[in-house]
Image 1 (tube, rainbow, N blue to C red):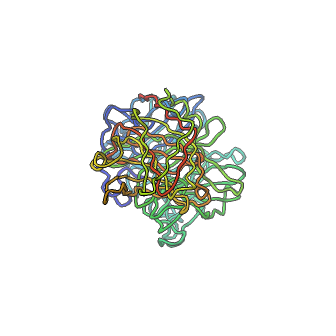
Image 2 (image 1 turned 90 degrees about the vertical axis):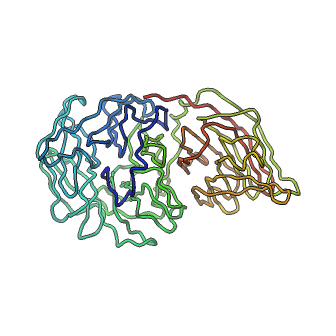
Image 3 (image 1 turned 60 degrees about the vertical axis):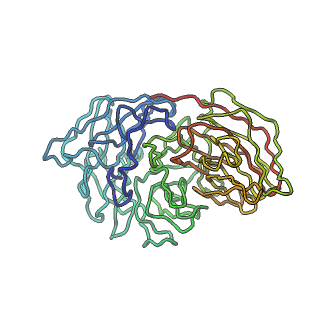
Length: 494
């Protein structure tokens, strides 16, 4: 993916704001460095984060746990005017180790070829010189986003990348014994012609391959491949996946191919990629949105079901972020009065900024339950009518989860509220019983939601209050909350 892909990303200038000195979701580069597409490689006990940045450079950070990061000096643009890559490293790459040296792949400008930076110590980098991987038949256009994988049996590197095959978007396939001499093969997967209702895709940005549970998967990102309805979301975009019995394919599109995405036409996170940590595969991505700057998200655990469908789950290592317990309650009962549509229960004398909330929710006897955070209490008119309040709305009968902006108001003396949907996810199997384990994690302007520890949302509303209280709303019935705990989250510094 390119840093300035205006066709796919629109007016990105509004999104690439230099972040303030705050902790962000997990990691935000400081000293005025911008973050765009990211990739991670492991070397010993350390994880090395690379990301596209401004001025054609590559930003860097290092961590031992994928949570606490230390920023490293940027790799500056090493090309000279007239070089094939004179504008620097502008297209997404990957970093691997071969024969004791580190190779960082990148592209510079469409439709030019791909090249490498090399290093002996992950500190000092130099250009390999000439480009090493041009686009050749059967491929043309969109030649970028190379990821490499070592095949120990064949003594070969296999690469997959974004490309076009006979005019159609595809996941290209190349191989090399040394990352310099390359052979072009038939693609791993080629899209059918795209419509909003079929399995076609506009492009396969930043493809990546891995094996899990005896199946082989390719994950990739696509913004413009929004579907009318897919994987429980309407008008969705994000990180998708393909599945196959063998690494070589054939790959197919599963029934629910959107692994990590947003609906309602939103683009809150992008470029989901994976890495192994303590024998578990986790997915990371970049967060972005208006006024937030771009940051590195909390990793999620990649889970394969018995039927080999993928989902994302809460990664237990994130428990290290929990600092002090702010509140706990063994049980809460919120029941709507006969003359009201909604009953609002405020958690008194509690405010928080960055927090993790967990609880057992039983909303089977209500039309819906909404849990709000960072609210200006009391969450009742007229105090709340002028203050933005966000929450998770669960509708058991419809099987819907929604992240909403809540506006309570008085109508003819009755207490009601309106919900403005930021994103909605429909899963009747997960939601229909009305009994769920809920986990909500909020840091800076990001709100992440899990149900039964299955990831649902990662959204950054631009006008969420920096600090506030908590409320629970029962609509037309009774809601029971048990084992409620709210923890403050530790500050993360880079």
